[in-house]
Image 1 (cartoon, helix red, strand yellow):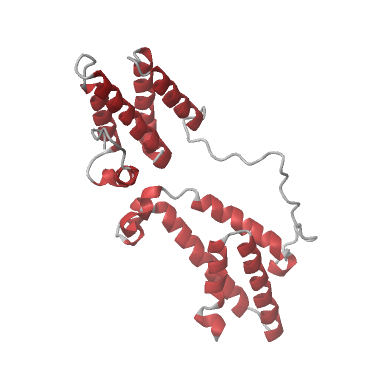
Image 2: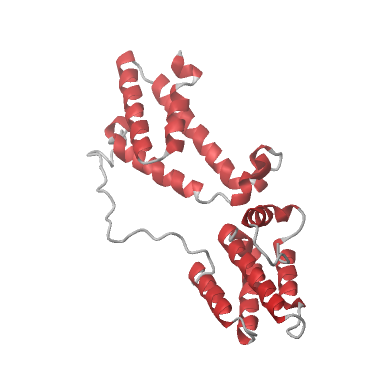
Length: 253
């Protein structure tokens, strides 16, 4: 990954960065990269020296982009080590001035003042949609039919977006959500699964709890409208939650 001077295999590099915690720790891997960065001497082969160092910086940059959580875990020990490494190499660029400046700028732009990965900023010129507030919003008797179906779909989408964005990239590897230690290896996915089951069961409960057939028909129609709005909002998880509830055995009876 580092020593190949002719080309970079980005597919292999990506696979390695996702899977290396299976056999070593992020801090150990980082120290090995730092060691490789300083290993060659300028008097040996200057051009090879520069290529190897550029390759190390490229791997670090891609690591930050793909698995930033590695740098913030354990109270940000690895992030502090990275920032210390940057300060050292910036003081002694040794012919890599432009590369180091670009790398340093990338790290600065990726990390906020709290040492966290900067998130996507929404366009401030685009105002959020006006919410559909029910007239009896403060009433103790407020129920699903009092709330506009589009507003229900919006709120579902907001909740599920925040759950989805907290899923770490390595949680998808080796079906970690099926392992005995799934709460440790795939906590984000498990939260999504719990949410999915909770909404599906709530939907089924709402329908079978209706006292009359007409009321059940109204509820089923309302859930279908909410599912259609979720689809328009690209909330496919919300769509499947509703479909799962509608197709459950209690509702089908």
